[in-house]
Length: 72
View 1 (cartoon, one colour):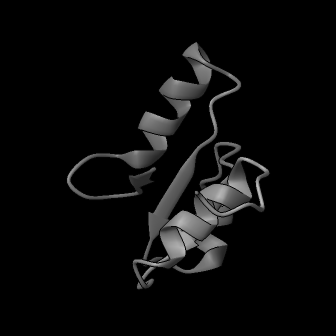
View 2 (cartoon, one colour; view 1 turned 45 degrees about the horizontal axis):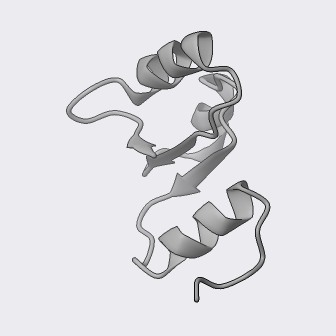
């Protein structure tokens, strides 16, 4: 999970991770519009728009890994 812009380029980070580990699941976060996110897409698994509530993060992670169960 990485921010798209600050203080690094999350898009480049996602690309490098995908180049080395193609099966790695990636979540990017950003306050930018959906259109811009789509244009910069690096085959990320999900872009989580900001602002978001902290409780959204675990739900998003469970969704991205395909698990609908809550931790014990």
